[in-house]
Length: 267
Ligand SMILES: [Zn+2]
Figure 1 (cartoon, rainbow, N blue to C red):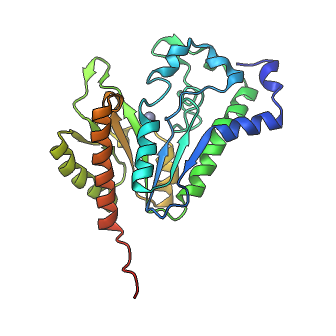
Figure 2 (tube, rainbow, N blue to C red):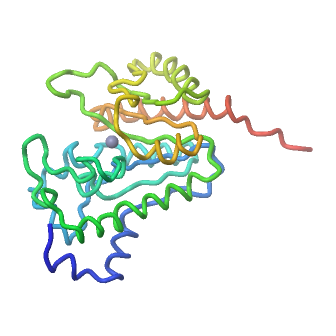
Figure 3 (cartoon, helix red, strand yellow):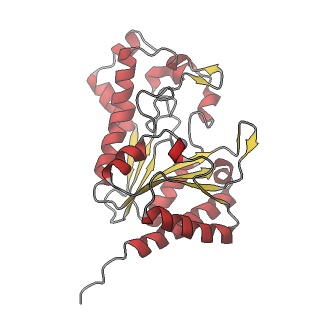
């Protein structure tokens, strides 16, 4: 997208849009974890006019990880863990992609063009980075300091390319760590009890996928990390939302106690 509309945005307007793009929860909580939800939002900032798409597209998995805003808030509250939640749609800018990737600003939805993303000019790209990339980057850098492990929370569609995925919750990892091992083991046990099928680098394998968030803030910093992927139809139903939330709360609390036990209080 281009033209005088965007070039006319002044610094105050850009700052306001940037501030509205990211939310920090329980940021001072003494938790070993930082939760990150890069794909939680479906909002396109008003000057971009929904990127020229009919509104309903912004409610689909192309635009947002369905159910992840609610799940991340719930986990943050129950685990008393800080969380960084991005509000802008991954179609506006996908924070979890390196800037050079084709889907950093995805130009089409499986053959349906995204008009605003077909040929964004330099001003447009620079503005989006200021509004939807830099504030998320800064929030994560600040919130990750001193944390033991990062968990990036996502959801996936039950069917992909005509194939039904046979996983309910996936743990995606790239480098082994005691944290990853402990989550896989604990979630395997509690998931089985809850009737949830747990994937080890399924429904897709991070070692063969392109990401940004946890490469940058996890692996490159020597911080154990994983992407959590939850089947999105489970999050749309209140009963299974509850089941998934409780299972994950128990698992991450158990893992924290086992890996980072709080020192005994001196008396
Ligand atoms: Zn996602």
